[in-house]
Structure formats: structure tokens, C-alpha cells
Image 1: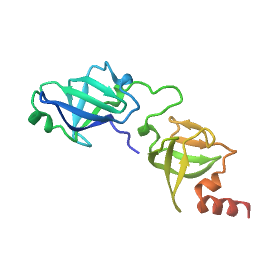
Image 2 (image 1 turned 30 degrees about the horizontal axis):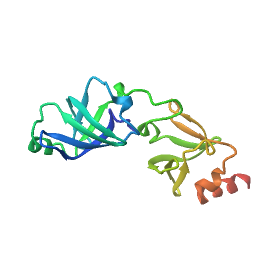
Image 3 (image 1 turned 90 degrees about the horizontal axis):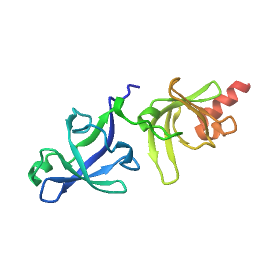
Image 4 (image 1 turned 120 degrees about the horizontal axis):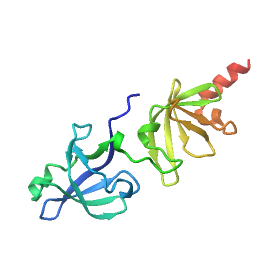
Length: 185
């Protein structure tokens, strides 16, 4: 899987105020890790992105009130509604210990021992923890992103290793059970 060149921080959702401000929804848990970066990039979903100055006027959870450089009217701000806020991936601060950016997880192989169970296609965010949607030859299955299920995530090797004590056959459904049955025959 090709890794994106940009880390998408959020999306502009609407015009805010009479001086050309905008509201944005943040994809990360907070703005703090990205505050003080030299530049930000704006563009339609998927790009192309262009560098711009951003000043955060207010932050409330995952909602931001922003002032974009060179934008001084609601009409000018409306042109940016729907645009993504991004930074070059090379400039992304490292995530906190034990955490990973979603784009690093997408496309990883999922293994139980040496048996390949599928590939991470999507990540669902739930209040308790993320859930990885795994594409497998027999169909998709869900993997809770918890220490009880995942032994190790090895980005360099491109793999997620399941905990040997986890019920990989139960998680992967019939496909994994069928493989387990056929191996023991």
C-alpha cells in the first residue's frame, strides 16, 4: 500500500464570523502536537495542497476556530469549506509512545504465528478503542486494537502480530477456523 505524502489533520466545515474565519473539525485528539509547526497545507480532499498560514483562534476538543492568512471575508473563507488541513508526512511529529498514525496501520499484514490472516483495510474509531477492518480471502473481519489481541505492531516489517493467547480463529471467523482445521488434518 502506498503511504500518503501528507498527514491530514482535519477538515474545514464552515465559515465562522465576519472577518473570514473558518471552523474546522480536527481528526487528532488535540491540536497541541501540531501547534507551532512552520506551515500548514490546505486543499480539496486528496489534494493538491498549497501552503498557507493558519492562526488558531479557539480550540474546543476536536473543533477549531481558525484564521487563514490572506482571507478577510466570509466570501473568501467559503472557498475553503470542505478543504483538508494537512502537513507533509515528513514534518509530522512522532505520535506518543505506543500510538501510531492511522496511515501507518492501513495496509499492514495481520499474522497469527506465521499464518497470514489478512490486511488492514480500514480503521473504525469507537469510544473504547480503535477496531481494524481486516480484508481476508474469505471476507472481512474485525480486530479490536487492544493489547489483549495484538502482541506487536512492526511498521518496518509491515505487519501486526496477534497475541498467541488471543483467539485468532474466533476473530478471523470461518476462514481462520477452516485453515486451522485443514492444517491439523
